Amino acid sequence: MISLPRLLLVTDRHRAAPRDIVEIVTAAIKGGVEFVQLREKDLPAGELFALAQRLRAITRGHARLVINDRADVALACDADGVHLGEASLPVSAARKIVGPQKLVGRSVHTVTAAREAERDGADYLIAGAIFPTASHPDMAPQGLNFLREVCAAVHVPVFAIGGITHLNARDCLTAGAHGVAVVGEIIGAENPEQRARELSELLTKLLRFGSL
Image 1 (cartoon, rainbow, N blue to C red):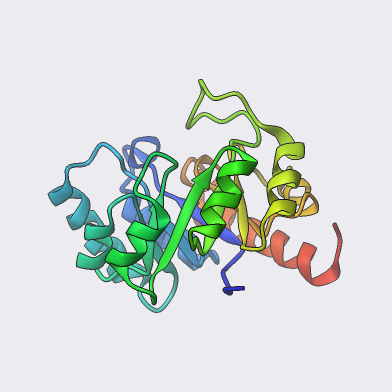
Image 2: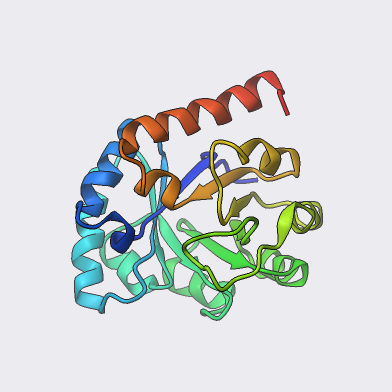
């Protein structure tokens, strides 16, 4: 199994406004974030590439960077991989584009999709939404039982997403998740560096001392 950090930060520049999303990611990395997903679905390719280049400059040597849905942008900015939604390219097709050395992740919302993504060669999965989330207010939360079923069905690392906070991260790990993916918990925090540090230290403590 591939070795991945436990805390994944997913970007949302709209929730960051009026602050600069790159500044927030920089602070989060200082706080311990080692895995970043650039997810800005409304940006045209040129603007997305420009933002990806800025993030690559601050993540290189400090955190893995994956680009949501755009394998071409991931290659152009020398990101660590691409992250696919369920309606995106098949994992096997993305792998042909980015090659065997890059990460290919997949978002899943059913156990069947999780199994299919693993069979197709996904390196990791993001499962959710687990709890109510401001990022997708119209999406009904799937809950911890769903997370348990996904984690039991596959062998690749699974990140829980959707309403994840320092208050429920323990429950996600107990359900079998490799780690957690957060948006607002860090991006919306008054002090992103401090919140990232709190989350990172919490995950480390839970895993190191088996306090699940």
